[in-house]
Length: 115
Length: 111
Image (tube, rainbow over all chains, first blue to last red; front, side, top):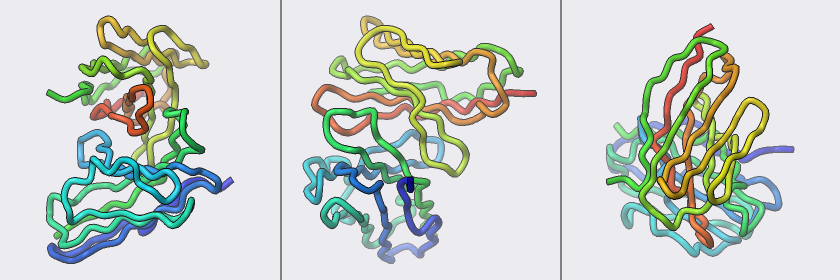
């Protein structure tokens, strides 16, 4: 079946512009996660959705970052007034439900470059 | 100090060798331990998971957890060039949803 998909795969933007990143989870997966991976670094948790609510948004680095999810499907991560330090790969993962933390399936990521 | 420490490498070994990858952690609340493999420009792929201390084997891969030392390992036997990738350890606690990752170890298997 189809895995997690993300779009765009690459995004180059100028400093100060807003960007929107999209994640399509595996159908039926109720949990959705956003992570950020800077060059040479591990994955950094940003936000977790269960359905369309976000019980844990503790990883969002500033109020320039926001995310929403429509029901149990598509999620968008929005970064306003982008800065060069926002350059990273943004990864989305989905999971069938609660209780199995090892069941996260990752998309290929969106590579964001802020010039 | 980071919650999870992992040697970034790079690590190069000849084909057929046994590979040992390791992570240490500081948060005693971590209960679930995972290893992910990430090929270049791809998302991480789950390889192994273990709950609490002990060993788990799956084909050429063995995961070990020593909670008393806060130390986890992944062993790859009979390594193949296709095993060349970045290996990330990840962990989480009971009732927690987010994963805390190590920085990843870049592994190259030389034919």
